[in-house]
Length: 219
Image (cartoon, rainbow, N blue to C red; front, side):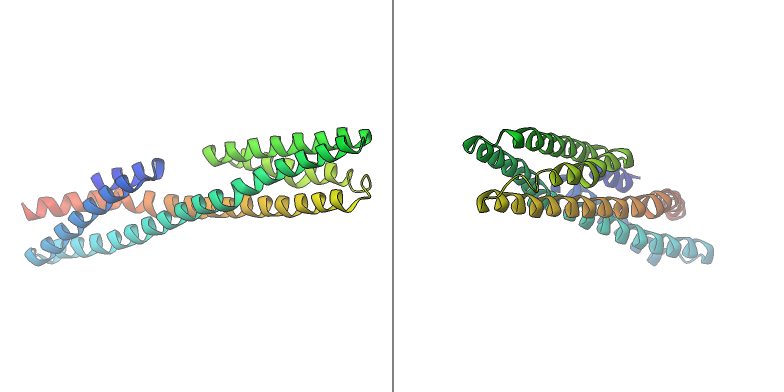
């Protein structure tokens, strides 16, 4: 039961201290089962212990995979998603300044619309990273992959100088990175949730029940 509580705590607060506590309690549980397997000779009880050991391995493998997926999610958010989001905003700011410098008044509104949609898309991405809800993800994708490209297209014929075209190319590159990264984040979260729902949440209660039976057998 304590192992499960630590596992659930880690899913909410993914820090090293909680993970170390989980590993410590898990090791104690494995040691208990190993000792029980040596002591208990009754065939039915021995079978129960063996089943417990096998289920514990499934739980252990599932949880360690979840830990890896959480680490991967955090890494790509930090190294790819956040920087490319900032770069989208900065690139539009540079383009806005360029339009100001060259008195391109017709470009101000479409640039502002792109910047607004970038902000809205990023806000829903941030929300999704907290809630992990499909609704927030789909709204973020709507802004970033449907609304934003339409507004970006309006800028294509407005600039003739190389500097402005380079800024648009930069924007396209970081936008592509941002979209690909949030899609990878989503795949990672779905894979994590699948393991939690179909392995940890199913196997965990069975292990707790069987461990209790083993404890009663040892007494």
